[in-house]
Every structure is written in C-alpha cells, then in structure tokens.
Length: 530
Image 1: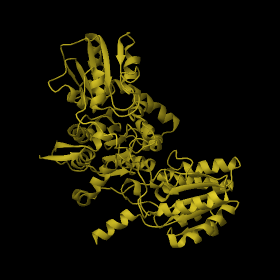
Image 2: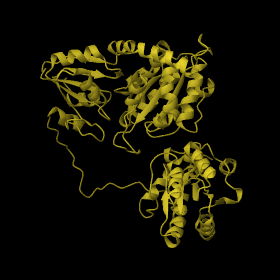
Image 3: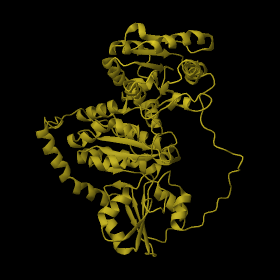
Image 4: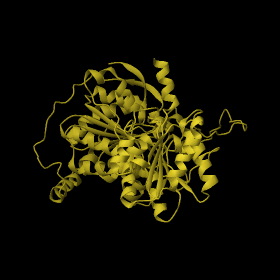
C-alpha cells in the first residue's frame, strides 16, 4: 500500500488496525503506552467502533481481550513487562482454553530499567505458557508479525505473545503497510466447554496443548522471521535474537564472516539450530534481556559444545544489549568518536515544579519527622515514587503496584506505628483496593495517603479509573466515612493538612487522606487546547 515512518509501537498499532482489530485492552506502562494511544487517536477506531478505552489493570485487560476472542473477534492486549505479572493468571490459562478470534499479547520489556523495577524477560512467560512467541528485529517485522499474527493465532487456536524491547518500541523506521482487512463477524466455537477450566476439561485441553508443541516448532522452522545465513568462518556460529540481529549487522555492514541464525519466532527452530551446532566450533548467543535462548541451547544440546553469551561473561548479565557490547563480544575494536565530557553527569528525574505531590510530601515529612521519629512510609509506582529522592527523601519502600498499602499493613501488624502508605489514584484502582479491604477486615492501624492528581501522570496523562470515585470506593470497601479526609495540597492549606494528618495518624484504625489537585501537565494541556 504505502510506506510510513513509525515507532515500533506505532507499527504494532497500525498493523492491528489494518488486520481487522475489534478491540485493544491495556494499562499504560512504558514502553508499551504508545500502542494504545495510537489506536485511540486513529480515525478508523471511531469509524469501526473499535474498543480502545484504558483498563483498570493488566489482569482486567487480558481477561476482557480473551472475552472478545471468545466472541470470535480479534483483540490486542498491551502492557509493559511487569504488567505480565499482573496478567499472568489469565495469560497462562488462556493457553489452556485456547482462542477463537485472534489474540496477540504484546509485552514491552525494559532492559536497563529505564522506567521499571526489574529487567524480567517476557519470553519466559511465553515458554512457560507453551505458546508461540514473536520477537521482531525491526519495525517492519513488528508490523508484519501483528498483521499476520492474528491469522496465525486463529490457525493454531492459541494466543500469541509478542515481545518488544524499549529501543525498538521507541525508535522509528519506514514500514510498508498492507491491505486493510474487515473485522471478524461475531462467532462462537463448536465446543461449549472450551473455556470452562474445570479439572476434567483442563486436563484434556492441556494434553492437546502439549501435542501442538511439535507444530509450533515446525512453524518456527518454516517461519520467514527465522533464517540461517551461512558464513565462511565456522570457528563460531552466532544466534541473534530480535533486535540483536540489527546490532550484529551494524557491526558487520558487509556481511558477517560467521554463520548466523536469526531468531524472531519461538519455540527455537531446532533444524536450523542443529545445523549451526553441526557446522560450528562454538556458539555465541546475542539476545536483549536475560539469557533465555542461551539457557535453552545449553539444555537442548548437551553435546559439550561451547556456548558463549551472558552466562559466561562474554556479555554483561544486566543492562541492554548495544552495538558496542555486540562488537566487544565479536572481538572487534570499537572506539567511540565522541566521549562524554566528565562535566556531564546523570540527573535523576524530579517531580515537576508546582506538582501537588510536592506539597503532599512537604507536609507529610514535616509532621512525621517532627512528631513521629519511628515512622515508616511505604510508597508505590507512580510520579510520587520520586519522593524517594532529594529534597524529600520521604519514602522507605517501592516494590510493585499496590504494595504500599499491603506492606504498610504488614508493618502495622508487626507493631509499627505510624505505618503510612502513599499511593496514587491510578495505582490505587489498579491494585490497591484489595489491600485496603484487607486493612479494613483486620482493623489495621494504618494511614493511607491517596495522592490524587486525577490522571495516570507518569505515563503521559491517560485517564485514571478512579477519578471522581475515590471517596465512594473507600467508603464502599468499609473505611469509616469520618476517616476519609480530602484536602487540597497548596501552601495556603498547609496548616489544615498538618492538622488532618495528625488526627488520622492518631486514629487507631484505617484512615484515608486524599490530597487532590489536578496534574499540572494535564491542566496545562487543557489550557493550550482551549
């Protein structure tokens, strides 16, 4: 059709729209956010009534997408890698139920933890669930894999996991589009028990999934995304996975002297891998993330052949793969043309000037440090996590979405007072509400601060599921209405805020304080768009 310049995320989104998408389900998280935003803003989304509203969390996104697949239509699920932990219950079981309409799950990994708590590699999830995995090496492959992946999902009867990494998600390249397909008609399968995972049904479906593994391997061996490129120097063979293939080619502009097995579809293509092993003296594995393929090759071969990669120190076990690290692994000299001046230092991110979180932390830290020297503050994932940095140095933990409330509860159970949780409005509805219910049921002595900026600010200002509902949610969960306190975090209100905090810190039960002021970034955008 035509060639357009796309981010990797945008290529995925456009491919889904061109392939007859009926719904995208996601919770915002870098580096996956732009996929859903692109679909939301595309004219065809309104024209075709494609569902594109943000979900409360990744679990609800995965389940809703499976429901759309149940009805025979094509659905896309998008999340960052740690979101896979939230979606895992349904994701793993969806391999047992199988699908009807094509279902693609995009997991955007973040090697080097640019905006994440860990470097987990989502390929392990696909392998654990026993389903096919795509890992594009460039934007065109990302487009093609999604465009054809829905049909592949319908053909195999299984969801497909697509693994992206930050550099590919957020870099641009020309992409050639294909013809636009219509949406699937609503339809239902012939097996009325397919999605009823009672043990008797699940055992049968699991056996069927195991029987399909050979078909998935054969599909990888025949995949256009996996290819064997011969080379004259067979002292070493190279396995290059996903974006690593690009980095390899950047170091070998005239072609690689060694045989190369490019892998962008899993399970591992055994025939091509066996050929590489038979012809080469040792194997170098290039992959961005954890040593997923390197471990599999060592376990699969068992032939005594030397396998180099992250596990033996040829490549670092942490951080992103880069063209420079690939050059080092190949034994190439790679001298940087421009050194970074010593005067340039990394600057940690900081809360925006004028942000309501700043006022909240200013007051909270003053009260706690002056009056409660034994206090601890458990925080969460969001802009307010930056309260860990100077000048506030206000929090003692940040672990995962929703953990602030439950960790504060556990510390209170251990006898800590005051035990304070700081959580944002979007994170609260994502995974904090169940923790609050535990606190209410246990009558825990905790003070919970829901810092409400009325948006999902950290990822760009997407809608927050709890906007306008937080007090009702807390009351519905069982917090006593007189201990749900709302304040406006501004300097003129500091004394009022301090007094409210003192009262709730002294209350021997569950109390919720909601400092509420709209994010200054979304407010500024609204003013510009008037």
